[in-house]
Length: 299
Image 1 (cartoon, rainbow, N blue to C red):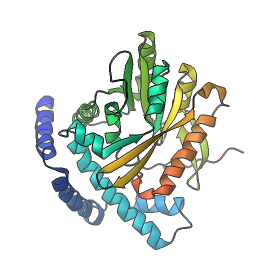
Image 2 (image 1 turned 90 degrees about the vertical axis):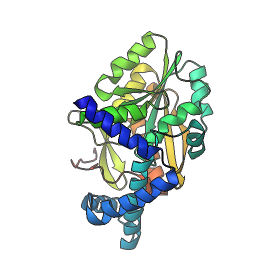
Image 3 (image 1 turned 90 degrees about the horizontal axis):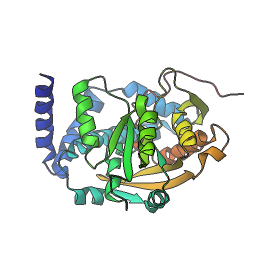
Image 4 (image 1 turned 135 degrees about the vertical axis):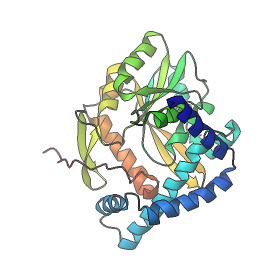
């Protein structure tokens, strides 16, 4: 029965994905109206987050960020469905990568890489980077992303299917260290994306820093892995250049994270992400309850 329900859902969404994006954006406009004006999905949380992060902005400026965010959120939903039926050529045209040569050069040196990323733009399109790199997926290099399994098994299976669209591998957060060690043991270089802007789970080691005018706890596990496994650290700086078009610029955070003082790499990432959000606040995922558990800055 589980497979039956999954196959029905996959069939419906794949049929929708066959529609041109121009038509899907009509659905997105309707979806925006429903989410924002009728369901009012997490509007109180979004409004509070934006107000506390941008206290210097006027009410009208914050309201504009809010409305643009929900429009982007609706676009993200239909664009993610589109991944079930989109050509590589169209994907390359819509999702561009600048300075991808940085990753190519590290892989050519036999260096594994951690990629710091965030819920900006359309993060589900980011695995299409495998269409741009010089070294295609498969030994001696594997392209991976770390994920938190969803509680709903049907949607979890669907998202894993979508995220494998361009040949990348998904590792569960709880097993990522073991998975990366296995790759290294087998002589495989890894390029692994970490969505490091999420609220830390209970028991996660964290670094508390000033972020968007608020004391904020960041997951430090990405830094720990980079230091322990000797992996170079890169940041993906995301932009939404126009509707249905995105650009990610690869920026080197540090080639040898182990040479930095502890916690410094996480703080560098937090600053880079803040710069991305300040440039265009509406592309970040404001519905995430990022500050559910208040923290204080270290003395």
